[in-house]
Length: 190
Image 1: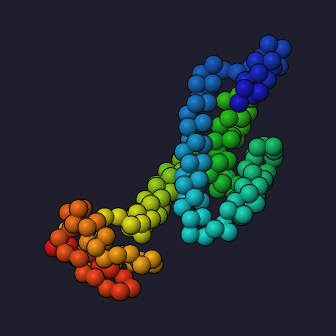
Image 2 (image 1 turned 90 degrees about the horizontal axis):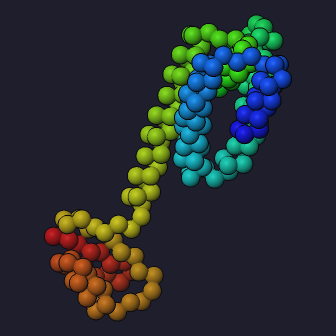
Image 3 (image 1 turned 90 degrees about the vertical axis):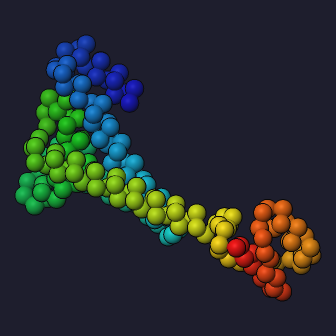
């Protein structure tokens, strides 16, 4: 980001770039927009990679394709027809065009596409939060949490532990009844 600021200052001093100062106030909002979009995608990918480990290999490839599908190097005005409509459906296209408009004074802007991109960003972020909460709660329920009163939680013992140790351990924790078995013990709480 500092390189961009240095280049903007350089071109402003040379008179090669004329920027309206109010347009520069739009830059933090665009960065926030892109940050929310990136966070939503990151949360979705991290939630999915907890279940599908090989998905992390495809992330780099997908990011490369997404970069080529976003008009960063080429302007949107250069495209026509169906390809232009497909590129406009990319939710990162409008923030990039807004950057181009705010800094360079050129860019293809349409309010409908900006609203669509903002809506898609909100959907991706909310979907990411919901997916993360589901994965997080699923992980919490599979971990060994202390059982609640009135429930029965199996305690699998792979080592031979003296039953007196288990009984002392449960009674010191406030558990009332111990239901012993040979392969698995169950702490039945009343």
